[in-house]
Length: 356
Image 1 (cartoon, rainbow, N blue to C red):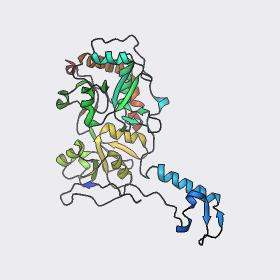
Image 2: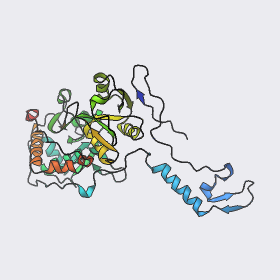
Image 3: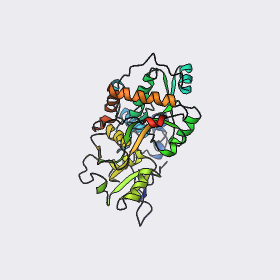
């Protein structure tokens, strides 16, 4: 079956959409004559008139097997390789086994069940990503979730159940008690503070640019004129490019992963979104990708929790301060986003006004 390539949306004064382009070349096909296609089932090659059979040479069967495996599982030619945080290189966090927080209904429920339920992302390299082969979650956000759990008295290697929550469902998940807290590129803003509580921030993100490693001209937002800048359909970064940088050529796809594929295949000049997401992609393929320029927005990432649980918010703020002082925060960054080659920034101080 022939697959239709993803359709890009190029926002220019004269055209609503970019021409059809493929994000990667098609996997090679091994073509068989019509009378011989039964060898996929039998391993035998039939003569054109059906008289007599002979076995297919072993070398041919090996070629067929390799092509079948690659067609099903090999990544696109431009896709970043499966690199990133390695389990054996991640920090270990000391558990505060004597911790108690009876004033927090969320903590009491978790304590009674013997484990925390933490909401995370599952599709953001370097921040929150699930390995489909093992079910293991990794990334900077996951490390933040683990160090907080340790400070709350839970063993982060045994006492956490991760639950992937889509961005649109985060507030509902916290309000309904589906998760005890949420760590997943969750920007603190006034609208969300009316619905949920926050601890932190634990990181200040900003919109930046991801380019090919050999790029010399595109060094920041001031160089985007006439360049194809890719972001996700309907995203705030895309809207910012359209409104604040009218000389750029915004291109939209359904996901940042497609944008990155097209960047590696020279179909766009840059990808833009929060620098944490871009650093994650750069960490997976530092030989071909890099993040450039100063941030041109400010996104304080917080830990979402039930709005009424001020005791839990204060305890998490205390945990973030302590983990920054003992070096755990920097070790978590270095083992995840730091693989991009970008050194750790100074962590922000928690905003205690959020807990009052």
